Length: 164
Ligand SMILES: Nc1nc2c(ncn2[C@@H]2O[C@H](COP(=O)(O)OP(=O)(O)OP(=O)(O)O)[C@@H](O)[C@H]2O)c(=O)[nH]1
Ligand SMILES: [Mg+2]
Image 1 (cartoon, helix red, strand yellow):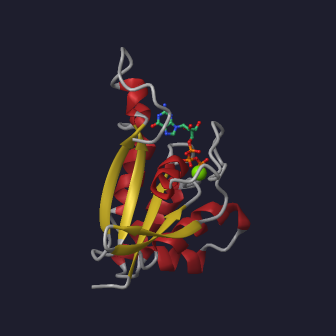
Image 2 (cartoon, rainbow, N blue to C red):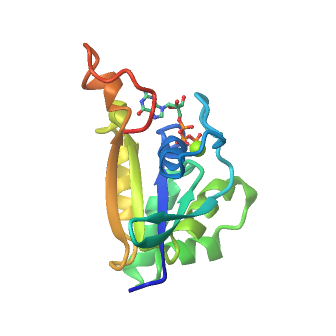
């Protein structure tokens, strides 16, 4: 058993990653915004979940999902570790948010993929799911459909703005 497990929260901008992070932490100080791009760097925090110590990491939204997906496919076909190789090849500041995500998922035990229920079936969303499926098989993937209160339960469901 590991002494500390690493859990990275990933997804598109504005889909509720920091809201979920704040719920884990029970912390009102986490920066959450209705505007995309609020989280700019990965935010690690150590918590206890039951008997496990977990380093939980909030990340910025994936900025270049198509580029990341296509390069992950290329790395995988060459047997290279996708996140680590992306970090080595992409150093331009325009990929800063994507690189932060790669740092967070490198060596992660769990990758929590947050998807907004509003665009669950969209092309970009599918790209993101397919991308993280290419991480090493040692990474457990957990999908979270967030903000489902606004879509599935519009007529009287939960009105909470907290994460699912
Ligand atoms: N109704 C509803 N709103 C939510 C839910 N989760 C998050 N929000 C709102 O969605 C907006 C974005 O939430 P954030 O948690 O900042 O999203 P994020 O993925 O961290 O965004 P970036 O840091 O920009 O990538 C905020 O206005 C939240 O209050 C939810 O489950 N239901
Ligand atoms: Mg955020």
